[in-house]
Amino acid sequence: MTQDIEPSPLTGGCLCGAVRFEARLDKREGYYCHCRMCQMAFGNTRATFINLPKERVAWTAGAPTEYASSKLALRGFCNRCGTPLSFAYVGSKNIDLAVGALDDPSAIQPTSHFAVETRIANWHVEDGLPGQRLDEYTSLMDRWKAAYGNDVVPGVAATRASTPAR
Image (cartoon, rainbow, N blue to C red):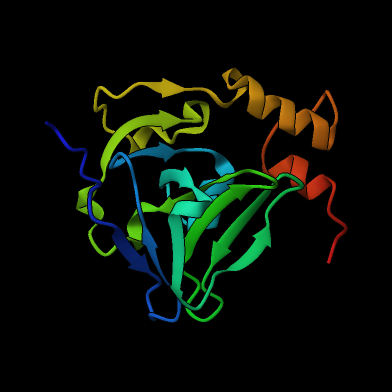
């Protein structure tokens, strides 16, 4: 008789330690996001994420502060040291956690690239992983259109155009 044994939870948190989490994953797989919004939120050429149900994440010390980076998404970060920690669509049952915030990022195997149309070519080394354009992801395009109108070009410009100047 074979028993399915759930892998041990992964732990992680921010640079200063004020926010900590535990994540129980079915698969230890992640993806690269190359969208311009993630590039800016992470201050990097890409962001790396694991996606899992919110119910499988426990914030064990502190909790991330959330920033509404658009009408459809929230980004979690430590309000003390600034570490990017999470991304979630408003109303979604899932959350993306930043691979770099894990105590052992090497536990995650990259499986794909997302938003390849904004990938920065001179910072990309071909790795044979499949890629997807943002505009090919129908349900995501539908979210953008519902939030910003049918003519929206998803990204930073759309979100800034709808946000009053500060």
